[in-house]
Length: 279
Length: 297
Image (tube, rainbow over all chains, first blue to last red; front, side):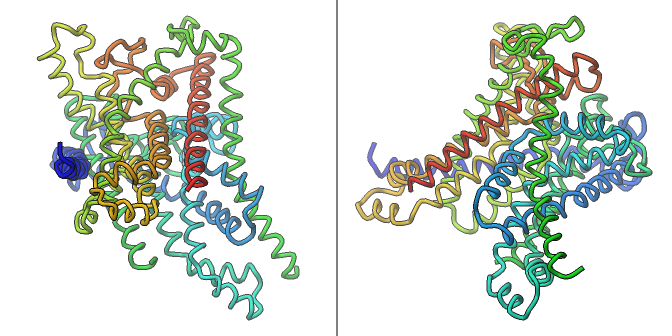
C-alpha cells in the first residue's frame, strides 16, 4: 500500500472515530429523551410519587436534590476555596504542599462506593448523634468529601491567574495579606471559582452509589437536614431496578430526561462563564 | 486583637482546610480497614481473595468471582474504549477543523457529565435487548440458557467503554497537544506524511500521557458502580464467557449493603479494602508514568 493511500485511510479512520464519539453521545441522549420527554409534564414535576415511584411525579425528589446539592456545596466550598488560597498564597512548593496534593489526588481517584462505605461507617454510624443516621446531612458530608478535589483544583487555577501586580499594588497601599486576599485576589478569581462550583454541582447531582449508603432513600418531602431523602439519580435507579414495571420504566426515563437537561444547563452555564469572564 | 494575630488565625484556618483532604483520605482508609480487616483475618486473606464461594448466610466469603468479574468488564471495556478514545483525541488534536471541534468538545464534556444511572438505564433497556437478541438468534445453540438474558460482561463493557471515553479522550488529547511543535515540523519537513508523523513522532512522544489516560480510564471503569449493576446481571460465578452475567466488586457492595448485618457487613467493607488497594495502586502507576513522561521530555 502506498504511503499516500495509508495517509488517506488513516485520516478517514480518525474522522470516523470523532464522528463515532459524537454518534454515541447522540444515541444515548437521543434515546433516553425520546423515551422520557412524553412523560415529562407539569404533573410529573409538581406531584408526589405514588406506588414506589411508578405513578405520580417527582416533586419532593426535586426538592431533596436541591437541598442536598446546596448543603453539599455549603460544606465543601469554604473548605475547597480555603485550601486553594492556602496552596497558592501561603506556601511555596515543598513538603507540605506535596502531602496536600497527594491527599487531594488520591481522594479524586477513590470510587464513589468506597466513599459510601466511609460515609456509612463514619457519618451514619459513628456520628449518629449529630447526623441522625441516614440523612441529608450524612449524604451531604459524604458528597462534600467527594467534590473537594475538583473544587480545590479549579479554585487554585482561578487564583493563580490573578496577576501578581494586583497583589503587589494592594500590599504597597498598606493592606494586610488577608485584606489583599479578600478584597483583591478573591474578587478577581471569582468567575473561575464559580465555574468550579457549578461543575461540582454536576457531579453532586449525578452521584448515586455513595448516596445509596448514606442518604436513606425516603420519597417524602424532607423537613430538615436530619431527614432521610433521595436525589433524582437515586430515584431513577430505585424505580428502574427495584420496581422495574413498564410504567416505572417510563417514570425512570422521565427522571433521566430531567437529569440530562439539568446537566446540560449546568455545563452550558459553566462554559458561558468561562468564555465571558476568563480568558 | 491586633491585625497580626488576626492574620495568624486566618492562616491557621486556611492551613486546616488545606489538610481536610489529607485527613479525609486517612479517615477513609482507616474506617474501611477498621471495619473490614477483622473479617479478612478471620476468613484468611488467601481464602477471602481466591475463594469462589460467596454465601454470606452460611459464613462463606470468597470474592474471587467478583475480582475476575471486575477485571473482565474493565479489560473488555478498555479494548473497545481506548482505540476509539485515542483516535478521537488524535482527531481533535490534529485533524478537526475548529467548527467540528466546537461540536465534538462539548459532546465529550456532556458525555462526562451524564450521571452513571442514565447510562445504566440506557444499557438496561437498549444494549441488553440487542445483546439478548444476538444471544437468542445466533448463539442459542452454543450458550447456556442463563447466558441468554442480555445481562452480561459484554453489555457492561459496552456501557463502561462509553463512560471512560471522556477520560481517555481528554487526557490523551492533552498529551498529544503537549508534544513540542518542532517535532512535528521536523518530521513533516523531512517529507513524512501527516499519518507517518502522527504514528512515528507524535504518538511515541505522547505515549506516557496516553498510557496514563488508559490507566485512569481503567480506574474509572473499576470504580463504576451503578451503571454496571444495572446491566451486568450480578450473578456470583466465575465467568467463562463474554456472555456470562457477572458481579463486580463495586456491585457486590452496593447490592448487599442494604440488607447485610454482622460479619456480612464486615465482608462488604473487606471488599471495599480490595477495591481501595486496587485503585490506589492504579493511580500511583498513572502518576508515576505521567511524571516519568514529563521529566524525559
